[in-house]
Structures are given as C-alpha cells and as structure tokens.
Amino acid sequence: MTATAPRPAQRPRTLHEVKGWFPSLDQVIFDRFLSRQKRLGQRGDLLEMGAYMGKSAIFTAGYLRADERFTVCDLFDAPAPDERNAAEARKSYATLTRVAFEQNYLAFHDELPDVVQGPTSLVPDHVAPDSCRFVHVDASHLYEHVAGDIDAAHTALVPAGVVVLDDFRSEHTPGVAAATWEAVFLRGLRPVCLTTQKLYGTWGDPEPLQEELLADEEWRAGTHLSVQEIAGQRVLRFSGRPPNPAAPRSRYAHEIREIRESDTAAEPDRAAPSPQAAGSAGSAGSAPRRRSPVRKLAADVLPPVVTRAIRRRGGK
Image 1: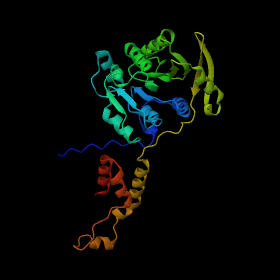
Image 2: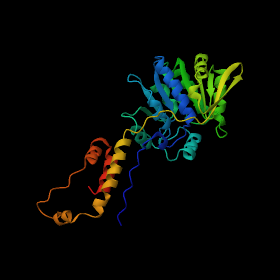
Image 3: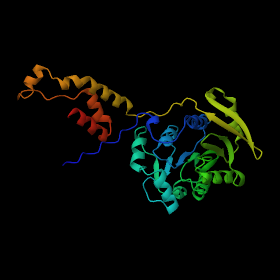
Image 4: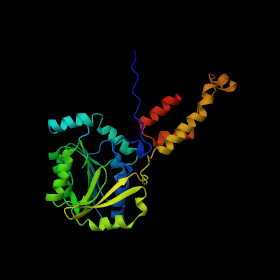
C-alpha cells in the first residue's frame, strides 16, 4: 500500500493566522514605540529572544529599516542547555520547529532575520553592546534564564532603547515576575507601562515615552488607562482590546486568492467537458492545454511547495 504524501503546510495569509500569543493591545503598544522611534529618527537594531511561530517577529520586522539588523534567538528544535529548560520546551513548545518559524516569516517578508538557534545565552556573541533600540524578551520562564536575558537586553540596548518583558505576571511564570521586579528594584530598569501580558521599560528616561502615551488619546480607543506608582516611579497600566493596528499581510495572499477563485470558476469545465473538447481530446493534432495566466503567475512567484500543491489540484 502506497503511503500518502503529507500535505504541505499552508502559509498564513494574515498575522491572525500565525499561531502564538500577541494580543491586539500589545500590537498597538509595539506600534506606538516603534513608530515613535522611526518618527524621531532613533537608530538601532531589533532583537527578539524567544520567537515561537514568529507572530511578534513578523510584526516587529515591519519597522526594520534597510541599514538595520533584526536578530531572533530561539531554541526551536535544538537541544535545551539543561534538563529543566528541556522539560519546559517539551511541555509548552513541543510542535515548534525552525522550519515552521521560517515558513511563517517568509510568507510576510522577503528575507529571514539573523536567526540564532540555541539558548539565549548566545545572544551576546551575536549582538553588539549598545546596538539595539528595541528588545523583546519572550523566551524561557525560568528565573535564572530570564535574569540572564534581561542582562543581555540591558547590554544590547542603546540608552533610550525599549525592552519588553513577556509573561511578567502570569500565574504559571513566577520566575519571570521575580527576575522582572528584581531588575526594577536592583538593576535600574524603569517601567514605562504595563499590559495584561507584558512590561515595557527602559534604562533611560521613561517620562517622554509616558507623556506621549498620555497626550495622544486617539490611539487609546478601546483601552482602559490607570496611573500607578511603584517605589516612587510612575507606571501606566493599560487594559482592553483595541482594534488591531495595521500589520504585515502575507505577500502571497493576493496570488493565493486569485488561484482559488480561478480553480472554482474552472470546476464546471473540468467536471463536464463540452462535446467538442471530448471529441478532440485524443486526436493527434489537438493543441496542448495552456496554463491560465493566474497559474503561470503562481509558478513564477509562489514557493515551490505551494506551486506543487496547486498543480496537483489541477492535474498539471
């Protein structure tokens, strides 16, 4: 019995179709900070520690400028550095592979980021000190690893850079909470704002960032704001589900839609060929069937794995 070949993974057409945890509120706040850096001409690279299937990396890469680097570090399917880390990976990220991340990322962007496959302790070997303007930390939940990731972020960031710490308050990640507040009370990290999932901070002056968030009320549609004070420091807390900001769309979405529409329109012709076509199908002088313009476009622009799937559906 011949085994059936596995179907190729379907490429996402929108960011929503990429698996992962990246709520609309955090997308909005990422956009506020990254857009502000662009508007003010702040230079620097981008760094993400812990990528999962690429959802936040795809979003962040939309703010990358031509002369900047984006480094993504994740274990993916590589061995973990210790048994506790390995157990965490088996429990929470059993389906994660580098291939899946890269396929998702390339559905939205022409080139991959600089991928470091391995523990985040490798980051200082690949990212220069004082080189990054924005760092997202979303890797291990173990205290020792998170504390090291925060130190790596501090070293990598320019003085006015922004760090984002994920899962700083989830009940299943007390190690992240411990490392985060240790950085605030003992290592000079100054919180800018909090969401349900992430803490945004800087080792620079948080006040200009906070004042801009407070001054512009239009972006806060759908959010709730409260102003807190922690150890003499002002902290903004946001909650709610605002509309998703503009996010990168798959560069294949238009072509895939056209192909599907073309296949649907052509279905009656394949199911019930005309008498003329049936009578001439086996004649020696019949012309070969020509590919539609949409199928030709697919062969030119889509990745081979998608093109092969389309050809199988159309019998060609």
